[in-house]
Image (tube, rainbow, N blue to C red; front, top):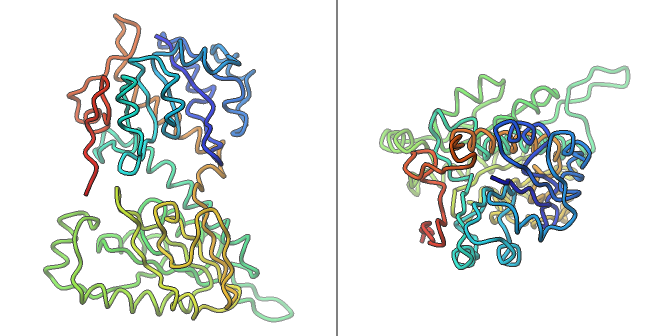
Length: 377
């Protein structure tokens, strides 16, 4: 069976879905691997390394699409890419199915599409969890981006010229990205405060040296939050009001704010209002990590840096993992390898998707030309 690795054509996407490390392992399993020339260049993986790993490098992407039966991608194929693929091709990548307009196009061309971001949060799927691997790096890089834009230092320093106060950082949303942001900011010497709708996150925040921004919750709300993992419960008007007050006070006094809150399949919730941004000191920095999903911050703009009249810089980088492409590609490629290895069938020397497997079934959004995914209302 032939695996294809095509260069990503989405603007700003520098990652690649397979590295020489994972190509070598695929070849060792019995696959033939085809790599489009230059596919890994932006992530510092060159054609020669793929050749050494046992891949065949092709300059013609049309030939790659015509030959491969399994295609590994980072971003979902465009309609034009899908039209070039041979019927029956299995495409594995990140499809953003809730907002992807091309599901019917994939079905029309008889593709089978596996959306890696839909892998369930079960123990044996952790090594294939692309959202966590990419968010981990993004949380780290978001802090570095903030540090670069911030015109002061993070740590407290005692100097002959006086004391330098530590930066005060507020992180809203304490998932994988938020926790890594806390850890990174603390390592750099900043004072960190954090908030999340999940009460259980408090212990994680405090274990990393952060201060928990507490929002009062009724016993009923605590039960709902604990029962749903904190993401699916609908807060009361009182909680929403109290949360807004806590966020307003903390953000107004912060030097740097990093927001990470995302709801799968929905627009990102607004956490920081323009009125709160206006209270921040000149030179303050906000990194809106949810900007690609609509943003957590009023005034953030996708892939733009906005400086408000009050001198607050709002960074709206839509694809932070692509700014650390060598590392995120390596992690993503291992995620795909870990997902595909158990599906390898030695008798046929190819991939045999176990469609009833509880790790595979949720990821199938299009199968044999039939759209399976139901978009949320």
